[in-house]
Length: 595
Image (tube, rainbow, N blue to C red; front, side):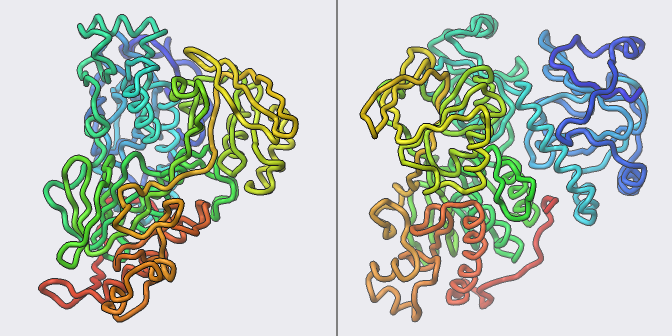
């Protein structure tokens, strides 16, 4: 028996002589999350690792601690347990010979969301993360297999509600803030609703806190944070903070969506000292997309989360530093460099800046909607949101690709999905491949010329009132969740007065930026404004934040990569203080792995 096992809830990990009675038949592999390594792959790993005997009860990875070792089970079995050693302990899976231990946190430096404890004595193979990186950068097949498994395991942890708990009221803005931060960063967690969940009262009694002190973040029954900031939650999980002091480097990229990550990969791989900062979560709007089917190089489609994680790991591979959360609040020229200040009072100075802050979905402003945001009104459609409405009808507002992708994702779970579109057709803003799938789907109903006028419901959404613009007739659509994708506004408030923006707030670049600038500025540069350059020389914009850009993932990636070409051209005009080499091309640091 291999010992592979999946369970939602189980008794504490049994002693070895009970194992044969409690381990069921092996379950099928899920989303490629649990591959079995071949003999050849294990032999290659063994050349770099260390074999070691283990006994029942040995803890290999402990929940809440960083793991810097990659384990392969050679014989015996290893249990993956949540809340190990507590009354809430339960078994997630048991790994037998040929399986390896680890999920996404192993690759990106987060702490573990589970405990790995030896169930049956045997032998394991242990490799340091550096040893693993060295091997898999030279073996793309093995590297891709491990990456896909780690991504799949993170998705399963999310679906199982593993990780930390957020206890708070659905009416609390801070509860909504914490839930959004956790969901957008794909952090395994579970929300315990103070209003309706019986567990909430028991947890408050256990920790001797009152409802007025919520929201709380509780992890492993040993760590309690009272209404933490996003930064405090990020530190708990192990997300990278901003550099200490006044960091200085070649390039600062503000925003970690597709454009920012593409810029980071290209800049760091070409030897530029690169820092990426992100206010909310890597991936931007693309990171919340359930599936992207028209992304070049992925013929079977790819989720926004997987595309994001691949980009993050690739940027890290070349030495780019990514810090989340870090909200930029000011940009100013300083001594031939640019200084960017952040909400926490810190500051980073760089020779050049790429702005890739993207855009944010517009909130729907209709009566009754504000109190339901975060509970049954959402601005993204991911596995987190679908957990709350699997058996209920839902509605999606919007006529673009994001709305279309959300509809198809939700239709895989909800019994009925309404697509509410203000215009007369889907053709104006949605790709044909999405329209064809939507028109064929039996659980999707498209309502054209339709606009939401009111959200109805006290604690949860019960229905939306809509108007048909052709007739002026109002009627109710009974749904239990509303997903809003109604266009986007740029995140450029902090740049107003510093850069030239268009009438909608997007950043002007190239000839348009130069035309709105003081002529002497570019005369002093001895050149014209570069294609993606803003009204400040050496500050570039890429992706959705740029005026006139095509709001698509592929174009954002292209602009992000192209911006680094212009960064190099700019740095060629800018002498390095104390030196002459203005564009160093040092060997990229192999700080992570997997392209």
